[in-house]
Image (spheres, rainbow, N blue to C red):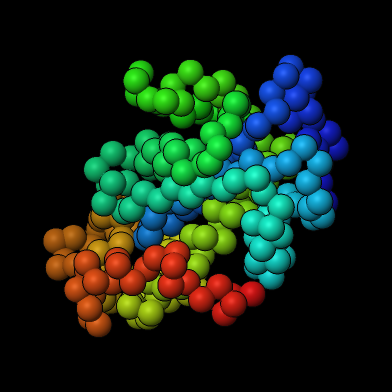
Length: 240
């Protein structure tokens, strides 16, 4: 169910003269493994979308259905992915904002205005083509703005499908079940097998496993495994 006032922030921006508005959200800040994924979505002024809301309030089946609908009606969608290595090198907030910037850069056309779920705007280098773009951070924006809600669904489904592909390389961790989140099953698998190359080594629940030797990719080299995990070879029908 959509919240009272759903869509008001976008309506207010359109009344100020903005017509191309991108909603941005991320998925995957809390897991112990896998990337953080951001999506940026520009919707038409009156999109034909029913049931769009915060992705966390939807069943997997509903998210997958809406994911296809969002791609059908959206003006443009951009995806940004930041892997566990970068998360460990910086921190999860900086990595999330970087993923959002990548998602923005993958939009075509560029928006006139960004609305971002949360409390933080996206840092931009001074010379960046989007450095002067109007940005508005909206706490609980995924419950208030249709474009942010749509971005939350796209980000969540994209990340879940990536984790399903990682599961094919490391079934011992159960990524298909928990998507990298810190369930007891996942924690026990880390204790048993040690962390693998997509685990976030600075996160509590993983760092305690060191100096255990990280579990290598069994069926292929790390580079080959990464090459296999691409949007081009995703069999999306299997997740519908």
